[in-house]
Length: 271
Image (tube, rainbow, N blue to C red):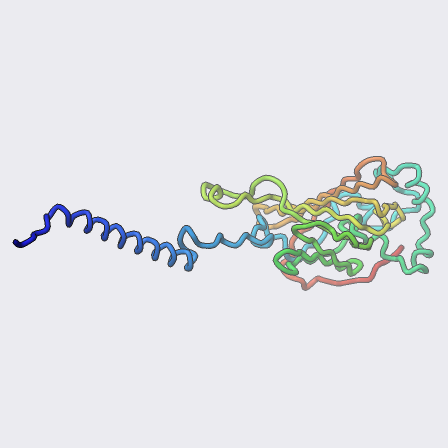
């Protein structure tokens, strides 16, 4: 007697074998995609650096254009002339005791070139990226250098200094333009800089004081004119609980220059 297997029994075996082959092939493809980083299992893309996220390029050479407070900025004001600065009684007392000769003798002729007053000093600034997370601002007036650190806070052991410690961020309305802007990450408009750990200094060269408790907040905004000119508008807010009755707000204008041919670093002057 010859045994003949039924044809119906072969079909389930074929289906099972085919399913197994498909599963193995799928697993191999998924593994290849994961290793290559192009499939769903790949690593996430690296986050953008602060330099890459910049909505505007604020680097370059800029020259201050003094359109207001001329007599407080272009020349040294007379002793006791602190009009428009919201000084309290103690602040007026300290300002009236200003003696530039004593500052020179003590090696403190740069007190009016500290961060809280530096952007009001007429001259040029040079802005560059020190690295992907740090902007560097140099001034030819007083030969000062400021560093703007993106991400993080000032170290706990940071000591007070003339330029303090500055923490930067991109702040303001989204800077994207057009339909495609919605596809990328949200970007900010102005550069916001908050500076603490400041050594005592002067808001004006004639001894208008600020204390080490001062918190300086600045906004750097680049503006493009129809004639091709570029301007850097720096809004400065000084909060000093020791000498001021309220926030002291100023706005300084800087015009972009094509190069550094007019860059002329000069030492601090106390008078």
